[in-house]
Length: 185
Image 1 (cartoon, rainbow, N blue to C red):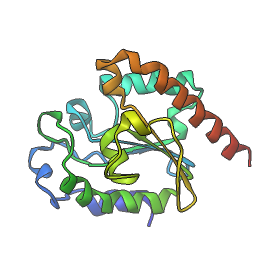
Image 2: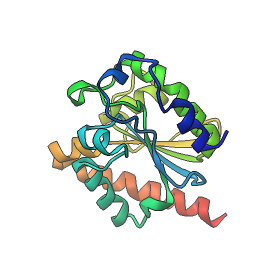
Image 3: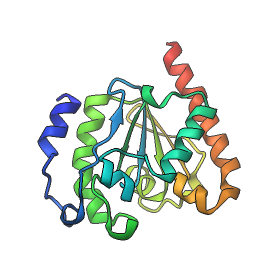
């Protein structure tokens, strides 16, 4: 299934209660043929307004980090673990993430990333280990079914805790190097 078909299939999704408060479902954007995918937690207020991932303050920081790492945003694919904004920007609940994971799996199948960056604890717990603590696992590669995954801090966390930027920058450098290696093949 192509990415556009997935968008159409879930455009009016009502599978979990999050749909009740959304303005837009935020499926993702970028290059659907990219070997590199970023997975965040869920849309914030600005993302819900625009129907695009990572366009608010956290998205602006992510853009700066990508630019510094020389990874063009237009060349990668960016999505979230949940596709509708949780009330008050709270962390998505496990049940919400499990419900939306069906969509994310279809995105994985369509895009076939070989590197996935999990931004924050929610996608890290959902995709890597339910017991994971982002402060303990960030910066450590995990491989599943031939896909390398790098957990790192969510840009919103870095806005609140600027001291984490140095660690996140090291993570982005490792991702950049792995991405370049994949592109060189």
